[in-house]
Image (cartoon, rainbow, N blue to C red):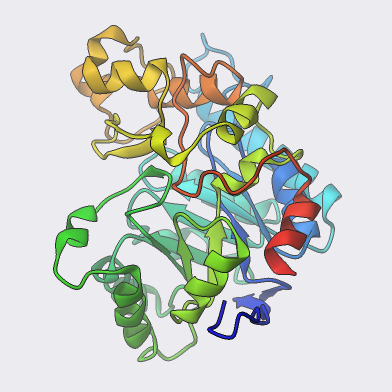
Length: 362
């Protein structure tokens, strides 16, 4: 919001060939939190709806625990189903798929998403340096990497330009101080003068030197219109919002998961170690307390071999991330991992996506 107290006008957000009515991208939340219902509803309301692909086949009829490789096949089939369902909900909306570079099937899922009609592919948990090679047959699919800092953005842009003669269609910059789930490079927050405004300015200066316009989207701790206006006022082109969409009717997670977020406050946020070797921001519960105090109290059985590098599988440390996230999303809120951003307390009840989008945009 500007100094006069008058809300700014939210302009459309163009990403590649796709134009969203509002500069709002719904965050991808795994496992089973942001699927077709949530993504389709957000796209219908003028934002960019995003399906999280990590472990998407785990609770599907395609996954057979005793069949080798079944998990990865199930992910592909379930992702196709979710994209199809989202498209039925929102025939003309913008639907994206989030794929995690740290997973073993990330490139396969990126190709699957592109072939199945996703408009955007958003990446996280690593640098997608070879992604354009695997989506070259789908030029209308916009590629949107998530980055933790300016250095990561530069490496992606320079690598893609040199090897594939292309640039990202947009970039998502994570605010390490507030983003939910895994975060990295937060040590820079201790530098004198550090602020998300400073990082936005540095990155926009670099992007302004490129041969095409690359929108910059900020994610982490954004939960209301005031925060949207604040971030856009710093020079960002759009925002990504995750946690706030959990407490909507269309969110694909169990009602108990939604209610747990609804009753949480900033004092409930904790930093939990993770099998990927990075800290993660989550809500305090019995699982989180065990993970922080003594992870030997948690089950360490790897159920799907889903990650390229995994402390649980490789070193018998921490816990199975896939199982922990899935348990929580399915309603076992004491024995699962509940990721959350820092924008808690923005809502007091479960509402529809259309109602939330109206609140964020009016």
